[in-house]
Image 1 (spheres, rainbow, N blue to C red):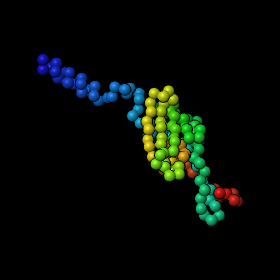
Image 2: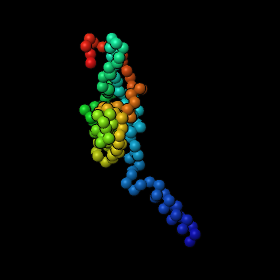
Image 3: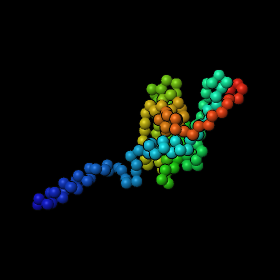
Image 4: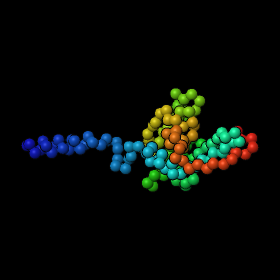
Length: 146
C-alpha cells in the first residue's frame, strides 16, 4: 500500500510540472529567439548631415525568413512560421510604446507584451527598443535631407 501511495504521489507531481494546455512543441516565449533573429537580419542606414546630426532610416530585413509588412513581421524559427504584430500602447505618448503580440501562423500560440519601447516599428519593438546591435551603414546625407 505504501508503494502504491508513493507511486500516485510521483505521478501527481509530474502532472503538475507541465500545464495541461502546453504541448512539448509549444515554446513558453518566442520573443528571445525572435529578437536574436532581428539582430541578425535587420539593417539600418544612418546618414550624417553637414552639421553632424544623424538621420536614421527605418529598420529593414535582409533575410528571407524575416518579412516586414507595416506593423507586422512574419518570421521563421526552427521551421515554424510566427507573426509579430504591434499596436500603439494605451500608455504611449506619441508612438514610443507599443503592445506586441506574437503568435504562430496557425493561431495556436500567442504571447502578449505591453508597453515595449518601439516607436511604431515592429523590428525595433522586437528588439525591445535597442537597435545597437543591428547592422548599420553610415553615409553622408543628400542636400536637404530631413
